[in-house]
Amino acid sequence: MRWKPRGGSMPGTSSPAEGAGVSASGARHPSWQARDRGTGRWLVSGPPLAYLLVFFAIPALIMVVASFTPPGEYGGLAPLFEDGKANLTLEAYERLAGDPIYWEVFAKSVVYAGITTLCCLVLAYPLAMLVARSPRKYRDLLMLLVILPFWSNFLIRVYAWMIILGPQSALSRAVNAVVEPLGFEPVSLLFSSFAVLVGLVYVHLPFMVLPLYANLEKHDPALLDAAQDLGANAWQRFWRVTFPLSLPGVWAGAALVFIPALGIFAIPDILGGTEDTLIGNLIKQQFLETRDWPFGSVLSIVLTAIALALAGLAAWVSRPRRTA
Image (cartoon, rainbow, N blue to C red; front, side, top):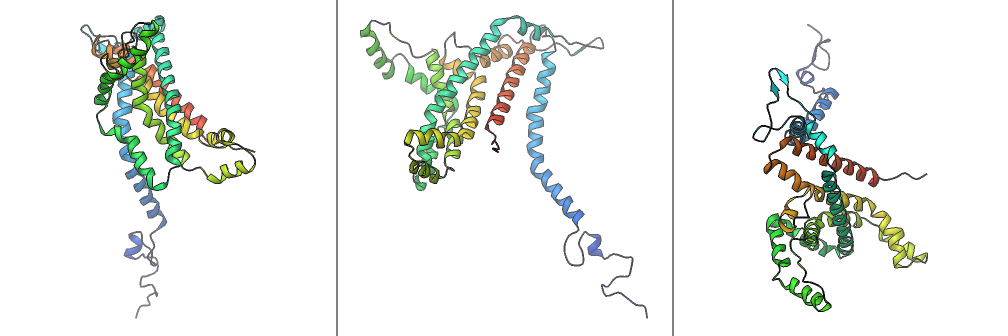
């Protein structure tokens, strides 16, 4: 009669459960747990990474290659290889570096985006504070009203401003009724820089409200009570307590507004005049009208580099600082 160990298996052998990664006590083996965690991470992070690779990294690489390719005879791109040699050139980069008019368009775009960001901050901060300090049962409704414009088409909302700012609109008539008796010429609100800025602020305002509200909602009211007990008035409590604590939301909202406003082209096309061409309009013209794809790619690369630099700057400025 052969002796068997209490576990039911011979010495030097493993049970089927242990071979499947399960110990005799029912717990999974650590190596199998690590493998499961790795598989779970890939299942979660894999689709976003694939999306960024297909719709961002590969198009960006194509754009970089196109920027070094000469334009085709009838527009577009010339063949990348001719007679077994790479057909590459720096002509598009030299054109950008040698003509200051393109840098003026970049500077104008930065100014428009900066004014838009500042106006959105001035308008969004009181609104976000109002929502954050409202009774909790009303906050969801108020935030729904903030994002309600997103439920309609972007172009429809922009075309609505053409009606509001048109020469026969009530707003234009009211403005001209004030300026004409003062001896000024009639003012045209539509197809002007004013119309472009109004459209930019209107479209991007919710992107400033949302991060500000998310930040202001987390503030502890006890801090304001403590500042009041120490003799601070309402203005001092705002500048010394509320505003410094809300700076991460300010920087996040500024990035969400400034970067899209920097490259937008639809609003200047619809509401702007001949003097309101921004960098987004110039890139669109290079691809769709003049069909100079290499130069359009160069402009897009510069715009992308500026946007990434600004996003990195906003992330660096808004990160929490450790105080000694």
